Length: 165
Image (cartoon, rainbow, N blue to C red):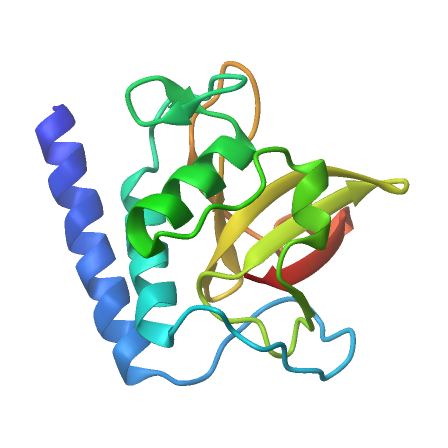
């Protein structure tokens, strides 16, 4: 069963890679400005980060976790993906991610960018944007890494910001 799930996710990731290669537009929540951030990573690296992150869907959530074997919390997932696929080490805590990289508008978000959620003035959660308004994240204790839509009933009510490492 686990092998079938991996095959299904791999096939989906290959389809996503083909779609990314064929499509130069991005989708996301309503624009909050129209500024473009400089990129430390090439588009190819950003796409590789995206495909790898999608492949981790289903990995168990674990507070403080930062490997597929141990499970992930949200910042552990981000750290593992960026370090493994691009050799870039982001800050380890979600609060520190708010200053990592450059802000990007929703109109200019691309695959591999960070999706940051705040509650009040505190950064509370983060994920990796994978295109078409969706992101991969490790949501909570008892859960697992999953793919969610920014326009879903829950996420569209959250305060969101984007950053480009």
